[in-house]
Image 1 (cartoon, rainbow, N blue to C red):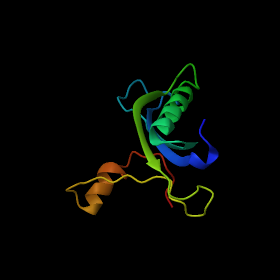
Image 2 (image 1 turned 90 degrees about the vertical axis):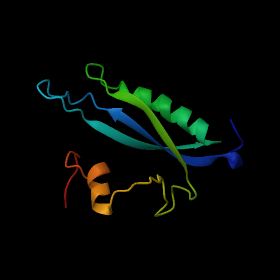
Image 3 (image 1 turned 180 degrees about the horizontal axis):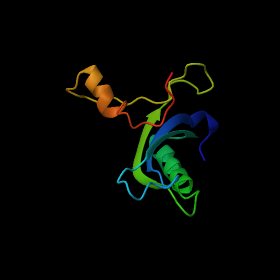
Length: 118
């Protein structure tokens, strides 16, 4: 492994299709999960390799209804240490012709999210 001074923090986002709770067989709906994990390593490729190995393990946690790792891993090199308040741990830029409300509705607020509303 690299010298401690040569290591950097990387956030890696992986995408999964959920197997648990089991999907309703009468529906064609699928549940998806995005996970961001933090890795301290020498470069983005090493961080992705570590995250993908962890993703495969995570996906197989429930034997009778495993999740499926979809093979998408996106890496982000942190500029700040994750122990600093307000440290940015992930950023992804996307170009779109959509206006802000349509963009949010298309990618982040489709109504299908499993989240608490305040």
